[in-house]
Length: 461
Image 1 (cartoon, rainbow, N blue to C red):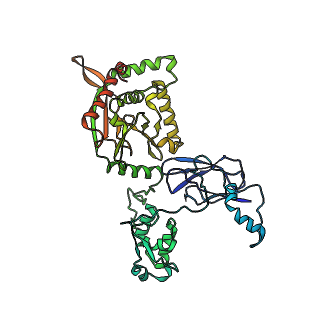
Image 2: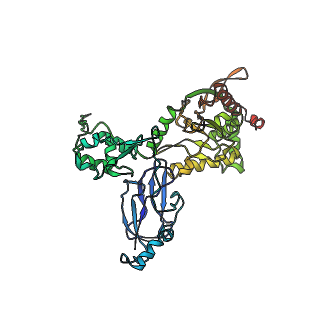
Image 3: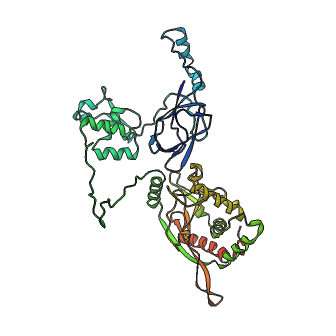
């Protein structure tokens, strides 16, 4: 019999995902938990395992197509016969009706890891009504009556819920605005479900909205004898779209302050060279970023404000007694910040191994949503691009991020004389609601002291 597999809730609160590539084709035989496809959410590329064992019947989406959560994704021909429908009113039909709830559990496909919580019932949960002044008032039908009658439901509701916004996503609302469609009227037609682009388009077609409004045309301009267009339009989606929204939210929520400090790291570079020559440590890629990460974990114990978050709803500052260290990674799909869990409990070689694994996973696009969530403090290595300093934006939910600049040889005062030394600039951005200037300066100074004299790490706890 045919079993449909719908795009599951990936546990991120997202409404859709893009099919990156299919790993199966119609006619293929698949086993339970075999990877079917890779899909890209707003955070990461996720592998979807099969909830059924059988033969692939139909692929409902092509690679590169965006699929809404709950929409059909793939169909399987699984072993078993379709049960024949009993005639209405028969004893068998009555028994099935009475035992529907009991049989519902048996008919539910297996709830696999990453698919979100399994529903306890097929009944739709009641939606909580958002109210203004906690009241319900008679509907003002003036707008509805002025609209074309063929776009209204047969029975208009006698009341409306004041202050309740139609259920839709920001892109759908923007699409409606672009076509000149009042999304409230669409909600009156579709009922209490999420409004889609298709609903907007169907409504616009019926009422004669601006579905055929031409997009602005930019004529090709001849450049050096060519007739190629002078611009390329890239869809904003996936990781880049999520990153942009997160950065805007952070920039306009937390008051950012950045402090800079240039430090002589010659002793640290000499230590790294010594460790690399140690036969027991050659398998570990210990570099400047690893030492900075270790120094930051040690310094955070003296400046807990930088390892905290602002809880607006509770009216509290939440201090973390652990360090889940975020490391900013530039990938082909955009900037992501995966985390090293319990980084403060790791030795230098362990931290080096964790950083290496994190970078390899990020470059391959296999970072999971769980690895991107819950960081407490972050580091971004701008020195790898030859940059000395910058003003990094805080990841949402964090109060500090440290930018590590390039290591450069330059004239520097050392022991009362000018000498060529290896120096690095540290740039710390912090949330001024939680961290004041003195605490931010103390953190940077603690990190700098360790880099100038690595032996000082023995003094911190």
